[in-house]
Length: 109
Image (cartoon, rainbow, N blue to C red; front, side):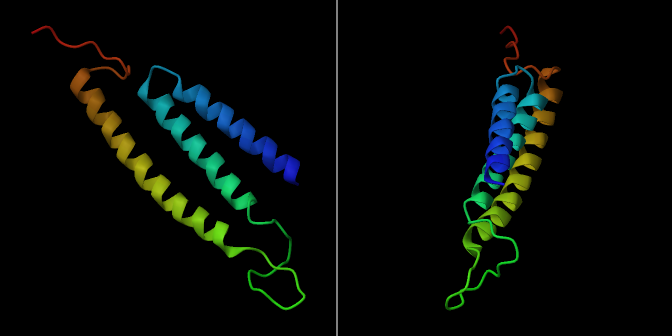
C-alpha cells in the first residue's frame, strides 16, 4: 500500500511540474492543482494508514493519527480557493492581453 501511495505522489508531482513548465496559463493552473493533490496525498499518507483503526487513542490499541486528516481537509479548502482565484486571474489576463501565453508581449509605447 505504501509503495502505491509513493508512486501516486511521484506521478502527480512529475505531471504537475511538467505542466507548470508550459508557457500557457491553463496548463500552469492544472499543474498547480496536481501538485496540491500530491501534497495532500503525502500529508494523508503520513498519518500511519491503518484499516479499521479509530482516530482515538485507546490503551493498548491501534489508532490513526487525526492530525494529517485535519491538515488535508484544510489544504483541500485552501487549494480550492486558490484555484478559483488563479482561474479568475488567468481569465483577466486573457481578456487584457488577448492571449493565454505567460510571456505576453508588451504593447509599444
